[in-house]
Image (cartoon, rainbow, N blue to C red):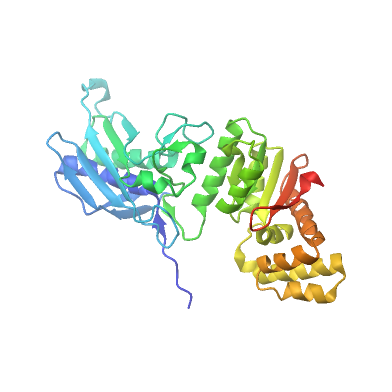
Length: 370
């Protein structure tokens, strides 16, 4: 029986829980073990509090250990914290029923700061997205409603290891410096949903557009991106977008943002999947890919023995080595089919080009030069 994957919760949920725990600590003078948090879906999740302290000045600090469930996530098990303080304010008799006269949210250690336009949060602000900000405010208001608190609340979100964790992300490319982003569109993390990757692609495209670019280079990972940056050394970093397996989604998102020129710069394995028009180019389709290569090989070479060798290759990379040596025209055929497949996902008028690298970074095919 296939094991059911465990869901987790976002950094935004963790920040909201730490905030609620800290405010409860200030008011109730005891650390809560768990706090209920209302997710952006409207559901409620009880989150465990990891640490909680109260100092002599009435400021409380609580932390939560982020749990991504069974989803691969660089922030899994990261400590997310909130320092909370009630601010002084003179009571206004006309607003005696008003709770929490404002929630001020700032970013502390390990929370990145936005330095480029195009993201959900403007430059100069801490990288705490609108969804998590809403959850933090609702967590504060829950406590204020119960305890009739009428003072403004200052919340500082921090991530002790945030700066180190950010090195494993694309934050610096997006103009998020000094730490990680506090994210979450629902509040929960569904295993293999890839929500975080999709959000990163969309953010990168928004930053590129805000930088005034109308041409982006889409790669599938860090290695192909490194080769692409060397090949198009004159382009700014914002022009390079890592799309992973999200072939269709990335093209649709780029077209929606007004990009008129899109180049797909990939290795042969991903190229063959894109050439088939597969919207999500996951490796699970490997045998289907080899079958298509076999059919294309017969079409181009008319050589049954050679085509059989391609079909029996262990991987697309193995097939690439065979093809490159004997029938490089088959590589060109795949590259052209990438363009044809990609055009299905974008409106007329968007120029699509493809570039295929060999595994040493040499350009084997460039549609712009044909």
